[in-house]
Picture 1: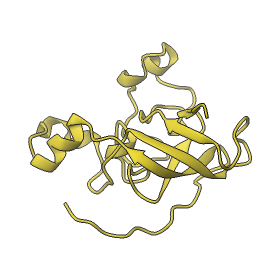
Picture 2 (picture 1 turned 90 degrees about the horizontal axis):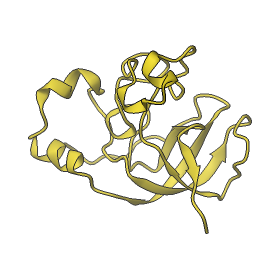
Picture 3 (picture 1 turned 90 degrees about the vertical axis):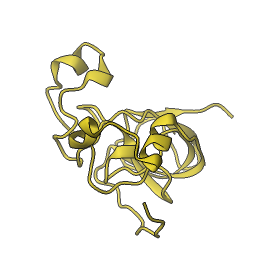
Length: 143
């Protein structure tokens, strides 16, 4: 593990938004990664290098032109799961069609690096300055 500055991410598409993370939770899976106690069986389902963190509260700082209902400055949380929709896969897998998003069959496919969630994918990072998130997992947070 190392601390380093990362370049500002660019929006990968018009249905994405960039956020500035204000608060990030520390999940048991984050602790397991730091302590190297996670099961190695999960290794094929994550990127080799990534920024941990998947429980974040943020403000939108850039909004893609296809992000309807969101504007710069909105306070949001992001669903960390990187499902077929977030990966640009259409038609979605059977699990995603049934709303069973944690069982997505395509967590290593599509237009994102491997990773079940934002904190285990090289393209989406958790606690970095600018985090990319698909329009589908971004959810408005009241006041």
